[in-house]
Length: 232
Image 1: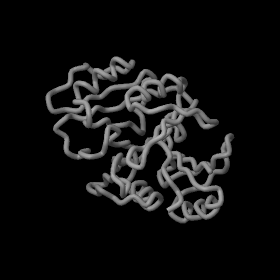
Image 2: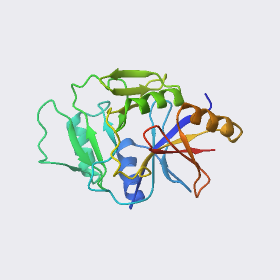
Image 3: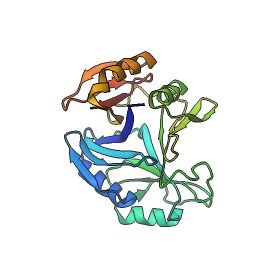
Image 4: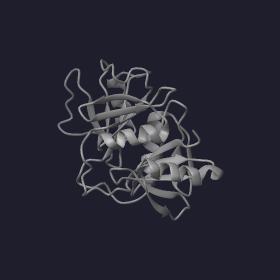
């Protein structure tokens, strides 16, 4: 399939600060282009991108990341995040056997998954990007990316590349209409020659084409009305 998931983009007021934090946490090298700062992924680890946009709203993010155990324990990952400028949310206390809710220096939430968790075994350090969204969106993205469903229960869905690695998951909930649909988006990449066919295929699957953005990337919306980009 010619269409690939390049990254999950987080837009905010300090993309450089966010990129610096995640560069440290994931040991990736930042690359800057017109659409922001890219921390490129691998065949099994989803890329992250940081662009300029609005400030974090009072609502929790629609998308947040799950860090899972690979080379570091949960305690070691929490310490590394705090050293890099992250902080624990809530009371700061983490019960034994529970995930830890944290935020990066820009206020975007993420979770450090408990060591005993088996759901993200083998997914790598960036274990999952979990999204507010319906089962329809999970199935849409499965078809769009050619990633099989690895979880489909009680309206919750998750997909994963055939190569393994980072999962993408949806909660089964309707997306809150108060959310900015463009603050956290998937960025897809395609060969320019394949773009017309891929736009037609995506709309046939249920996407809505909005048009070209300021940097030339095509803007679409998924079945939940959440924006995503296709770069060629």
